[in-house]
Amino acid sequence: MFREKIKVVDCTIRDGGLINNHKFDLKFVRAVYKGLAEAGVDYMEVGYKNSKSLFSPKEYGDWKFCDDDDIKNVIHGVESETKISVMVDVGRVDIDDIKPCKESPVDMIRVASYVKDIDKAIYLVNHFADKGYETTVNIMAISKALDNELNEALEQLEKESRAEVVYIVDSYGALYQESTEFLVKKAKSILKTKEVGMHAHNNQQLAFCNTIEAIIHDANYVDGTVFGLGRAAGNCPLELLIGFLKNPKYDIRPILDLISEEFIPLSKKLEWGYVIPYAIAGMLNEHPKAAMELRSGDKKENYRAFYESLKGTDLD
Image 1 (tube, one colour):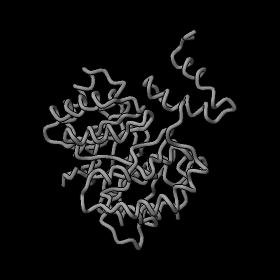
Image 2 (cartoon, one colour; image 1 turned 180 degrees about the horizontal axis):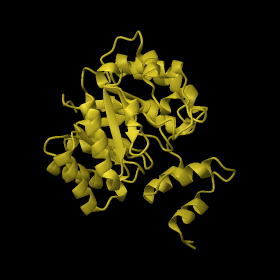
Image 3 (cartoon, helix red, strand yellow; image 1 turned 135 degrees about the horizontal axis):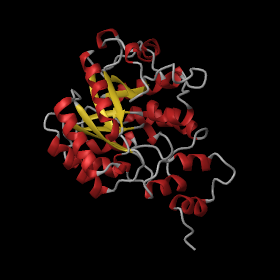
């Protein structure tokens, strides 16, 4: 489905870092950047710009903080038009640590926020826009948002924010085709001066399907990760997305090499993708943290008990 306006944002290192506390080594991150650059992907999101006063560098890897020098080491010597993105969470960033865009290797800053914090997200995104960055606001856990609250948040973003893109984020992998259509159409009807983006999680094997649905209804920014890497069930697989878009500027072959050489070995060390507890969390519109705890314990295949614990009732 070729549409020139569509931009692809790869979140492999940022979302994948939620599995291993962002402890990917430089060699791996450079390999991902090189593959994305050769594939023509528009943006690579390398991680978070989190405050070191809130998160210990002893506990987390470099990509929890994305110091400019570390990013420069990733992109050094690689000829590329792939732009660099980072994410900040409301309440977790020291804005004084972020240099003006002209002094940084970062091109775009994406502000992640729940609906209840949208005023704080607007403050951040406007600050980063003032510093010269491309900006987005990513509305997290949108499947939990009340309709009237979401309407108000979108109206506020349209009137008060300088965000260029507003993302629908299916944090729990709970959305279906109809709800994706509804949310994209709602956003498009309110956001007259901004693009709409889609970030889908794959708890119910619907991340790719829901991303296609968003594209059909004119979402022009879409996220993916190589081999679907991401917290718990992972994300929309980048390779499927590139294959679908039919845009001649994208070349899937470097991504296939990357999967063969880096991600198949990684899959033997880290768990992500379709696993029953993550699917259950998606079905019930719940955060995957309980499923992740189950998978790290000695009863990780006790699916029925897990389902019943989330439902809060014994179905017998």
